[in-house]
Amino acid sequence: MKRLIITIGIVLFTFLATTFAVVAIILNSDKILNSFSIISVDNVGYTYVVKFEKVKAAEYYDIVVYNTRNVQIFSQSAYKTTATINVDNLEYNGEYKLIVYAYDGLGESLAVNNPYKFKYNEPTFSATNSLILHDDEEYFLIIDGDLSKKDYKIRLSDNGFKLKEEVVKGNEYLIAFEYYSRMKQKLDIELLDGGSVIDKITLYNQMSPVSDLKITSPQNGKLLNYNDVVFTFTGGDNATEYLVQIYNGKKLIREKEVRSNRVVIASEIFTKAETYRLRVVAKYEDYPEYTKMAEITFTMNEKDTLRPAYINVNPKYVKPNSQIILTNPNPDGLVYFTLDGSDPTTNGIRYEGPIIVTNKLTIKTVVMEPKKNNSVVSTFDINVGEKKNYSVYLSPSNQAGNIGVGKVGYTNEMKEMNHLTNFIEKRLKDHGVKVYRNSPYGNINLWTADSKYYGVDLHLAIHSNGSSNHKSYGIETWINEETSKTYSLANLFQTDLMKIYYTTDPKGNRGVKYANGALGECNDLYLPFGILLEIGHHDWELDAAWIMENKELIGNTVANTILKYFGLL
Image 1: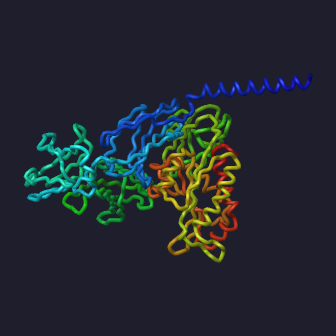
Image 2: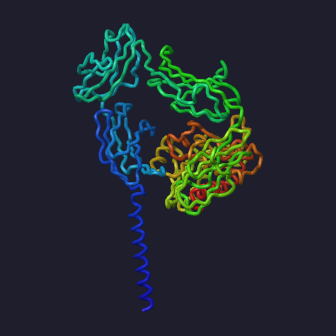
Image 3: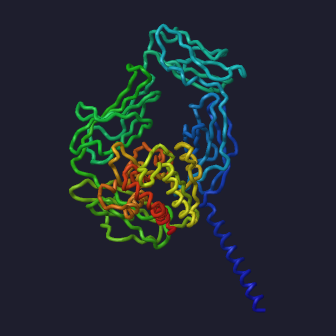
């Protein structure tokens, strides 16, 4: 009888527990990103209509198109489950992959479970076509693709006025110079399938194909805090090369080709209290007469700028009654904070101890010291909650050509960093973290695309360093820029690794550094949360020996930093 009662009790308890669990899942189902699919993709030319299932917890969606090299060639946000996109840089016979990502209010993402793969078979204007027309010279427009399937047409227009429309019969179409000779002329050329435009190109005579440039930040004539400079510009459409130039007086001190209209320029380039001229140049092929340019001047403040404070936990998921610790990474200065969303520079309370979290709140922080410029104001949106399933993408180096100090046993960066990563992977898995790992025979584009598709909580690249003169040593941690969401965890990595490093020599602590778009595996444009570790220098004997003798300790330290940040340890 007693056994029967116990059995009934166990069954009843299991039933109630299961019932409560199911109820909890139902009640929270609108807060969880659920699996979803693409319903259909239809296109006319480069215009695609994408339909996909609704995700209750999603605040918005991203539609991304990749080419065969896993390079992202298109991205557009959508707020409804039917979206029209114009992917006008597709090439004939090119193979592509379209993926929809759902994002919730915390920035968590989930990829659609059936990415759409397609081959673009519509004819296109060849990428080899020049946009430049020449007086008294006929222009031969190259069209890629099979034109025999349909009665494709070419339409020539001048500012919306149709000059000519006819069936195109070959892959080389002649445009007579009578339409532009001795005129400042812009011709719009469209390739038509029936009444639908399937490709278009604009040609220019005695005009620059490059649109006017405008620098949007920093503002002209401003006094800037001594810090990294965020440089942005608009315009420059159709340029084949963009250059950013920095002048101190008449002297060109730095020139760099850029691929984005947002560039973060490291403060180390500048000298305090000096005035600089910042110029962007947009060129088209080998036509200097069609180059466009814009420039501004600014002056650097004579004071140093403090680095912002960082926190000890992942702000997305903080357990109730947890302690938020604010750490000042500077040798001086004080941290001030607010909890009501107001500016800590004017309304801040001096930080003197941990902040206990009981519900959602926004912490704003600033580091201040009278003789230095304030740090940027950092905002930490603290969400009280718990995540059960974390995932990490580990990306050890594939650089087999980086040879280490052989006499201490260091072979090459690829082999030793992959071995070290084994310890990181094991410890994370032992604590229930799902681990994805790169193939050392892949490339960065593949790794970042896979990492984004898996929706991981952290993409971590693991490398060792080297220097040209083989005299450098120490540890450094790379993120995209100071305002990246990875800033706190990067500082925690750097701090924890320095605790086990073999020397307290300040030169060994190379700090948290900012790649400003130069490193793909920590670039915020490609990954929501990416960090790159440089664990010592493989060409410095003491560093190489320390790595070889302490791989398990280093690996466990890296893993423990991740586990603590995510509240799993």
